[in-house]
Length: 493
Ligand SMILES: [Zn+2]
Image (cartoon, rainbow, N blue to C red; front, side):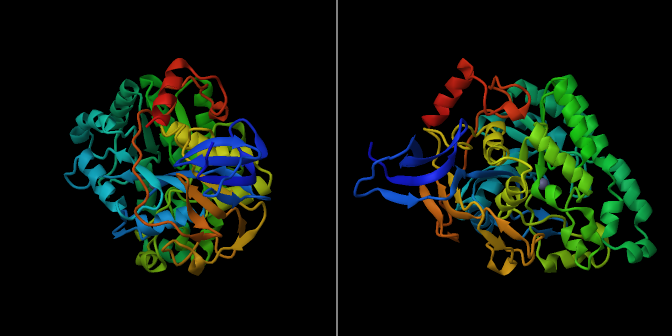
């Protein structure tokens, strides 16, 4: 076979084994995985000796150029996707949110425009349902257009995004009908509002500052909401995905629900694994405000355990970047902090350094949580998410221990701060390939803005798959005829 590119001699992580071998690429696809592939005169050979070669990362929870908290998140599709590429991210999924009077289709069109001409890596969107009465009859049209994941927020009444139980229940019924999946931001709005109101006094704000963000969001705020929406998933059979789960209590609820056969999947984010709410006491504590907020070390420990055991299936970032100047809008009132952090650039480095090098998860488990599981759950497998013949040649080549010190001035993100500033992290991409093209070379972004493509989808979650409900086993398991046909159709696109 004649190859356009050969990635030579790396420690390659495939769904079946990890071994030193070569990867042969023809056009945009992986065409061979075998040792000693032969290059001809035109073949580009990328030396991966003494490096890990892993599937490109999917960050399935990202907000670029999002109007939120009275401002607009500062990483757009140009800087956000460059930041991702440097961290080995080759696919991202953003959230298309309809604004005043917008239909779901208009929200998707709006987000398409943000990405076109700017995106360096491939992308698609979760479609947010913010006004159930208006949007419920538009869901099927979005499925037909290639969107298979939807999102509802149990909070954010002031942004006009909040869904009530009627909307959650009704959407989950539709997810069951269409074989699609509902993502939910689970926090208990009414009790949260009450706790915020009780603490919103000049005296307490002066005394506690940004610590009030954590003080008004005790763990039960998340746990109660997860429990409630899990019930709606259980009775409707609609596939549910809990985004950015941050608590030990939430993890236990999801584990118990999965054991009962409830079609619920959970995601956590890098920041909940390695940071805790002590940061809010620092001078710059307000910078760390994100939603849900950082929790305790015991919560992080339980989330790592959940990743290992399987009840937590995905690590993402909830990237929503705000600069120091934007964060300064808070002026001492924690309810006015633009909530969110940069994350795309550091997802793989944090997971690799604090997961793999710290021996909390194996290299293979990390690839499942960052690539294979998110691709399968979001309906992008086998095109994305694994090093397999026929898949897109999306690869990250990382040095096993070469560390970079985190310095915002040397990063691709627009953020002028980082939650990990000064940390030494390994796992930045020496080389990133997207559909066979080198977009990061020697740790520098070399790919062109606008080359990234929108990714249509035809399924989500466990629908169309005979995989067992526990995500830890998702990468194994035999293929059903239905699933095999699906994979065939995806590969031949
Ligand atoms: Zn989010």
